[in-house]
Image 1 (cartoon, rainbow, N blue to C red):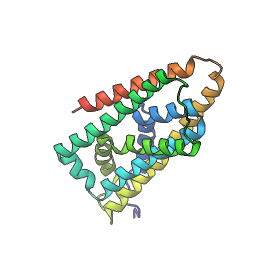
Image 2: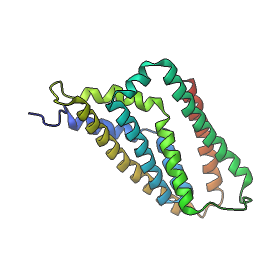
Image 3: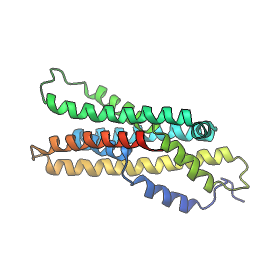
Image 4: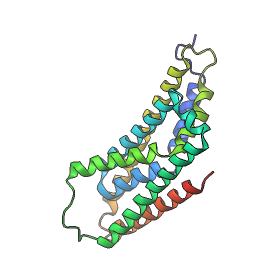
Length: 211
């Protein structure tokens, strides 16, 4: 008897890991924070993305995501909010390049990390495609004879989030390692910031225009 009510667990884990390394707004934010501010910032961003995933997992487990997916109005509202937030982050990054080091006060390190964590949560939580992903993928791995399907759904979602967070932390550490190797290149931080800002604007526009 399958106590957990899960079918093809190995396939689920493998599919999840492949999806976790697919480039997107989440991975871009983690690697950009790690490249700009070091591994601690990247790891905090990874935990923030994981927290955002848990929001979707909880909502999906209790049927709230089904309401979002089935309502075109709600889906569009969340989609445009997410797109606007990505574009805002992109523009903010590009504007900071023009300011350079002229900013009189630098934020407290702990405050900066808390801000990174909040931004990462919003980037993930405001992406309706994540809700759509959970509603499309997870039910395929819930056994028909599961005693408590919602709990099985929750288990799979948490497992996906934990695995994804581990992958994201490794990406943050790898990016930080590259940062330490190339930090002598004076132009690299500005080039990276320009690229990240442009990509965030592009991702936001793509999300807004997606059906």
